[in-house]
Structure formats: C-alpha cells, structure tokens
Image (cartoon, rainbow, N blue to C red; front, side):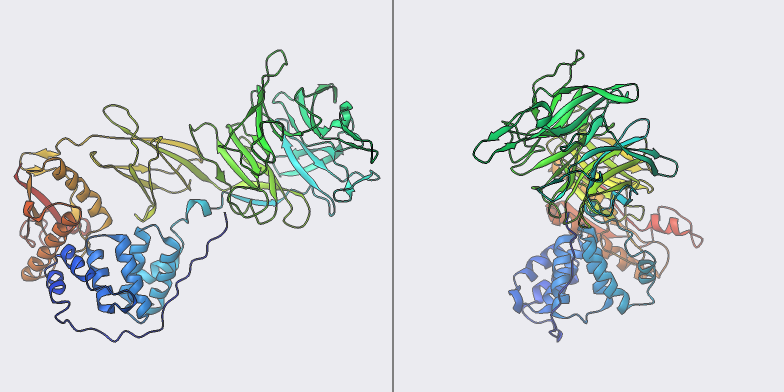
Length: 628
C-alpha cells in the first residue's frame, strides 16, 4: 500500500502559564489526592475547544497518563504541545510513550526526535538514537521482499510471466524475437515463449532460447508446467484453433486469448490440445497448475465474471477431462481486473488486480488458501509501485520468486527475495469447551516489551500478524470473562506459524484471603500504572465484576532505598494510583480500600544488599480480600 508519512504540525502560540483558581480548584484537589478519574471528569468540564487553558490540557494528559488511558493521554499531550511547543522535555517523552502504547509508532518516533533535541544527554535519548526504528512499522508497511534484476531483460521490449520448474528451467514470455511482425497495440513484436536454465547456487540464467515448437506468428505465452515436467498449459491466440470473429465490413478477424495443453515428447513439446472452455467472445489466459496437478487456475472474462477479468479454477480429472470452471468469487475478484494467478507449493494464491487498495495500476496480492477465511493481502513495497506490477510466482523450497513490472517503462522480470518473516495466525479458544472466542484482545510485544500492534480476534477467532522471524515476541491475550494469558514466541524459521491460545473462564482466582494475580510492579521512584500493571489489574477487574459483593484492600509497597518517610508517601501514591485505575475500569470506590506500607513489608527481605531484581519485586501492589 502507499507509504504513509506522518508529521506533527504545532502551533506557534506561547503558553503563558496558569495559576490554580476557583475554576480548577475542585479538579486540582482531586488531582492532588491522586483521584485521577474524578480529576479528569472535572477538568473535562473546563474544556473549551481551542480556547482551553493549556493547564487543563496538561492536567488531563497527566490524569489519563497515571491511569494508563493511552488514547486520551496522547490526545491531550498533543493538544498541550500544539499550544506550546516549548514545554518540558518530559512532556514530550510521556507523549511519545502514550503514542507507542496506542500503536502510533511513526508519530511516536517523531516526538522522540524532538525529545532528543531537548534532552541530548538523557539515557533515553541515547538508547533511542542507537536504534530509533526498532519498533516494526505497521505490518502492511513491512517489506516482505527485496528485489533485483533477473538478468533476463532486454533493453527494449517486454519480458514477463516467469515460471520455474522443478528441474530449474524457467519459462517466460518475451518480445525479443527478431524479424517478427509487430502488434498494433504497442508496436512491439508478438510474444513468444522462451526458456532459460537457472543456476540456484549463483541465481543466474543461461541457455536462453525460444521454445520453437510452441511459438506461432501470433502471441504465445506465458506458461505453467506440471511438477513431473510432462504437461504444459500455455496461453496463445484463438487463431491457433481457427476460432475468431469476422468483421466482413472491415475484412478483419478478431481473436481472443486461449489456453492450450502440451505434452512433453522426448525433449520437445507436442500433442497440442485446446482447453475446452476457450471461447470466441472471451479470453482464457495466464494458467497456473497446483502442485498436485489436479487444479488449473486461470484468468478469464467468460460469462459469470464479476468484473473486467476474474480468476477462475477448474478441476483436472485423472482421465484428463475437466470439471466445470469455478469463479473464485468476491473474496478474490472485484469489479475491475484480476489476472496473472499463481498457486505456490504451499497453497498460496498470488494474483494481480487493478481495483483493490494499492499503489496504482496493477498490484500483486496474496491469499493463503491453507487458512480458513483468510483475507487477501497486498504484497506492499517494494514489489508494488504506482506502475503495473504483476505475474508474481514464488517457490518456497527454492526460497525465491519472480515478478514482472513496468516501473522503468517496459515489462521486465525481477527476482523477489523474501525477507525473513513469520506470518502468524493466532486463534483464541475457550480452554474448557474448545469454542472459538471472538473479540479477544491480542497484543504483540517486542523483546523490549513495546507494543507492536493491538488487534482483536475476528469471527473466526483469529488474529493475523507478520513479524520478523529473527526476533523474540510476546503475546498478551485478554477477553472479558477469561483469565488473561501471556505467550512467549521464540524466533521462528519463517513462513506460516499457527498459534492457538486457550483462555480459561474466570471462576475465582482466590486462595484463602488473597487474590492470585501477578504483582503490579512499579518503576523506580514512580507511581504511574505501567503496561504490565494494567495487564494484571484487568484480571482483578474481571474477578470483581463476577463477584459483585467482593471488597478488596490494595496494599502498595516500595523498595528499601530512600527514607522511611519518603517511601511511605511514595507507597501511598502507588496505592492511590492503583485504586484510581480500578475505578476508571468501572469498580465502585466503595469496594476498595488503598493503603501504602512503604518499605515495611518487603517481599524479599534482603536488607541493604538487594539486587536490582529484588528491589523491583519489592516495588508492588498486592490485593487482600476483605469481603467475598
């Protein structure tokens, strides 16, 4: 799809500051008591569009930041910065974090660049500048392939429709034949079918020559060959079988593109047979055989076509007869033109279309036929461009593909070299019944615990991702009424990976008087709810929703660094922030009690010799049942 360039447009107005006054007194009081839900409600009453005091924008951003409402926090940080670009560097950093947490990574990177200019020696700046784009772009913008010239192309003319056989013979259509009459459409010679020998070790071609027994004085090619190398289907013109429409008034004959079958006889092709579904008034073209040789895919505008040209398939019976042609339907075909089908050995259908969302002209798309109800995907950059890009073929066992494009003003063949990636299909099911679960939230995180993308399982219970096969990833899966689950995904060799996540229905996650959750941890000297904290707190929300009489005490703690007095105050802030998050998720304040215990109840009693990991374990909130 087209590249999306995001930029931030900031106002040049100056923020003159704000002193607390009667208008903000109630909201400020809630904020000072860490009652961020109520604070946000009160600040919202003071929003006046573009006339909103920037103090209100900032206070709203901070309120939402503390309870991890990423969308609203990002919104109001953005508003505040738009009014006053000279705000403190920390505001930019928080803004970037909220953008990333909302999946808006390009904008987040732009904000981080501004942060880096304001705080050049900050360790966060140094880490960012080492690898500013470590968070993968949206999957639709990922490069799935690189490309390079095939070495087959002529300086003038057209070359397209590459098909590679099991024994490394490449067939393709070309206008390179000399002294052949030209075709009125583009004043180039008629197409002929050619072959070349491919060397997979050095990925080069040699012994290029015409397939003379196939070629006629009209258009011939492209072609597809069976796995055993004995059967070929190729496109030609209907004149070959004497089929055409006469225009007696103009003394013209109008032919169509037709398909023919050929059988290998020694080193030559012979026994030509016309495809029984050729027609005088429509074309059949661009054939592709399935790996088992039992299905032929082709393009046609025969009756039943949805648009200008559709992708069809037909069964090939053991006795050589054919079933009835089947239109692949609206899943693949549109009101425009779909053509150049290719079916790979791993059962993916590649095809070209000029009517789907793409760069322009013909773009290449893929449909994974192994995945039930899979969706058609654009192959993206750099395969697709604003020019025509088409005739894509891919060979998983050889790890190479070929495609054709007119990006330099003529039809050329390029090699498509896959980037190592994993096409991940995550299916969510009920652990007890095995039923699929729709609407489950599936977050995928990178090895730095940054959210790459957030999606929801569809009617099939499936979420689809494309990720780098060389990296570790983590899935966080949530659904109302079910225990959340974290799945670690180690590097994968690439290709298709199917992951089933079974979620256990929530009954009661309780032992004695304590609710069994992962601890809600805090960063050093911080009290805001983190990504990890929100994940665990969402479990508590679901438990309390299913147990409406339950009351819970929140106990928050610090590590042993800092004075007793300071740590007690810090733990109180953590307790209040935890409470505010639960209130923001719909839990009544009357069911919650929050108290800070400072460093008085360490989870790991390590005194003055704690490791960083032990300190982190001690910075936590935990939950005690007061009433079931």
